[in-house]
Length: 165
Image (cartoon, rainbow, N blue to C red; front, side, top):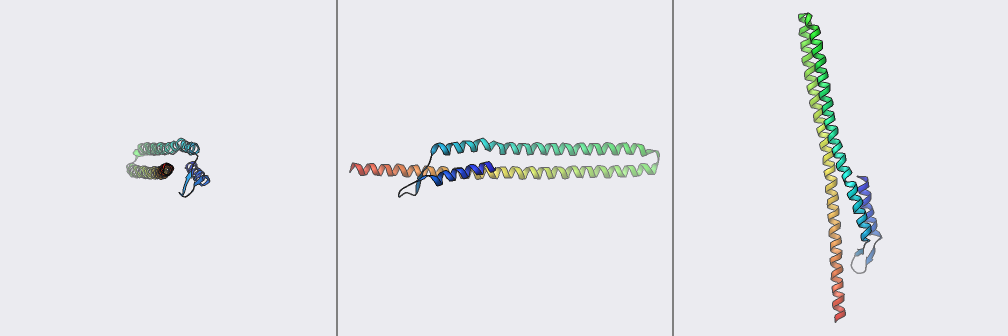
């Protein structure tokens, strides 16, 4: 994201360094330099999208790890319960403990899923926000450029009309 902001700063620098057209408040820009910066922005934009994909992949890994832990806990509880079946009281306690462990494992898995989902949602929201900001900025700059060229055409037309008189 910093690279994109740097490129936008670079566009601003090109605009600031551009020659002013007298009596118009407009500037003449180096088209090739602006196009180079826009090309660089396009090259860097997919990195944010790739980062969002990595976040989604991490989300799946976290969920898989939580499920593996839950299975391991369940298997451990099952093994412990089988060992304790020799005595009725021990079996009863083991059963209660295994139920608690299972419930806690399920709760932990739900908490992990909820946390991972919230984290991924936040990162995707950030990426969406940055892309929207970039698009709005590019749209505004495109409008300014179009206004500049429209005014330039008007000035040229007026100058031609003056020459014909």
